[in-house]
Image 1 (cartoon, rainbow, N blue to C red):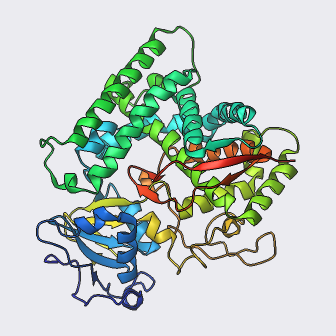
Image 2 (cartoon, helix red, strand yellow):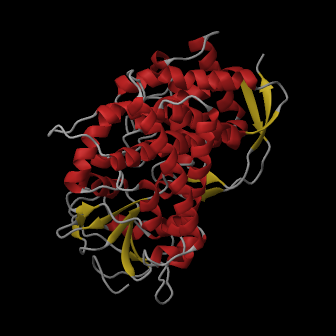
Image 3 (cartoon, rainbow, N blue to C red):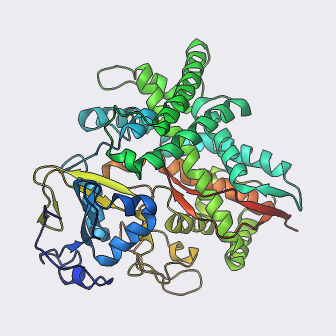
Length: 483
């Protein structure tokens, strides 16, 4: 590295000792920076990052809490300590900027609330946030449960299914009903197919040579994203027109966005409506779908956890289907989803761009430095989680991280620092759909797990980091009716 954000140190030997000597845990101590793996000319560490981003970030984490590396020719800083991740997330919009994530990302998301900056971001957030507050999520919960019940009614004992396809179809249908207010599976499938293509290509572009190419360079992947986005745009435009031509009030998210006004009384433009609905769709479908697949995968391999889950469902729900009011009582079901998101975080990295005056751990970070953090790497750090590879929902039974209270068995739970778990980000730009996604995942799992066990038979499933963290192939399972 040629541009330094702190004093020079040697490469770490795979432990955290160097970072801890002057790390985030000791306020006022000088930050110790480690050097990342040696890169190659022009590309830096991009080849290693592109080959296996998850392993690459774990490798950086094992070198220290502050590691310098190269994303192409650009200087980059990886941070692993929760305290510093919290600094990055809470300082976005102040001393760190939302970076440009590339032409592929912008083609799909436009300039929605995830991408927008400054005053434009604050305006859009104020317009979108009311549509996903708990009161509104309550109104969507019945649709979530109803769609899950319809799927459960179609499953039969001994049936072989592709759980990845089943969860994708289910969450697509929930998304188009709650976001767009349309009812047909055809609407869901058309948008869903195009979205699947776009997110796959975004992942390939972001971790490959396309990340370094100027926007004007044509590639096959970029062409596929454009075609998929054109399908999405046409579908959203058709649905928006149908809403505007209607004479009745609808309870869906799109209708609330169409009615929203900013402080000047201005509405969202047609392009802004398109960008926000696509953003909400990804948050409401992609994240929940993959999380549910990973949950079934983990439950199948952990009978003790599966029995504890169904025990809670039998106790809380008896012989009825769940609703929004049951969410707070399904504490173990919530813990299963939180632990799934720890091991397989749908959003697997976050990044910010340092402005003038930016600091991390009290040490200046040169303007223009790209600062990276990875949920995958931090969520599996043995400093914060005992036996970090184990699927243990009991970590979360007492509520908020860091409580250190006893769990239901009387054992003391782990003291998990804030920002050691951040699957939805944090700070002012925390994902607006967090509540929506968690309620949806818990209710869907409750409906299906109350009736069935799934034995997942696909071995060696690998996570693929694209726009979201997805299984690398179909996930086959056998349905077993309970009782």
